[in-house]
Image (tube, rainbow, N blue to C red):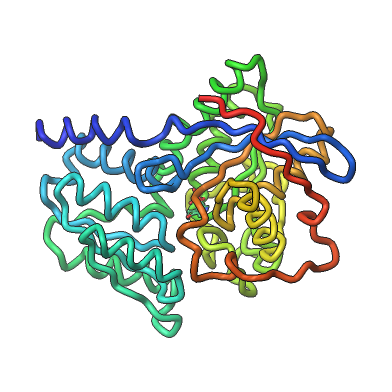
Length: 336
Ligand code: PMP
């Protein structure tokens, strides 16, 4: 246990405390600034390290997870990478259940950490099938620990105790306060946790969940259509998502998100597709509050896991897209 505690302390220094970037753009003739937490600075390169480390720490401290016990999780990718790396760093065998259509980079990365990958086809139920199979696996594996990210309140707590307070403190160091926060919903841990903390500090702060307009799960409550923003809109509304505690849902077309991520990368800021979506949703939130409103979002991961996807291809511009009107001027500031 002592070893595990000291390992947990070391990992704690490698997760969170990410820079808050001030992104300067010109948008429809106006100078605009959007703030974004650069989550690819985390240990395995995504925002999910925060949740995985918090859940593993809690499980160890409460005794639910014994040293060396097997861990299994159902995930669309980044969570698998986080639990694989952090779980292996703490000495656990790890099995990840994931839909077989996720990017090759994600599958390979998880395997590279020494975790088992169990691919689940659409015929076996995709995301929901992954959850069902992981539950069945845990039921017949003695001592197995299932983090259950879609239903575990510790996922929300991870962001209420790290992401939210970091945003508040980083802006305060510049004499600023957030007026809105937006984030795409996968498990919803990020948006719910940030909402809990930020609205607790000031009830007037707007917190918007974001989803793909071509697959509006939050609006409908179930899987509709197809989209290319890996990591968000996973076929159902997770148990930890309480839409009545959030403000209006914002929607972004997946092609627009791709174009925006490409535009950020073309000037050196290599972010993933959901980060492009978050950026465009932040602009929408700013449109509602005024062009100089302090709006914050997260860049959940980098472009490196999307080398085999449409992010690396030419994307057609469609009527109504916002990204063609964005001129990326540069990173104005990186607040530590
Ligand atoms: N973007 C990416 C790339 C992700 O992997 C995830 C996690 N599924 C999210 C956004 C959404 O984060 P959350 O699960 O906290 O809602």
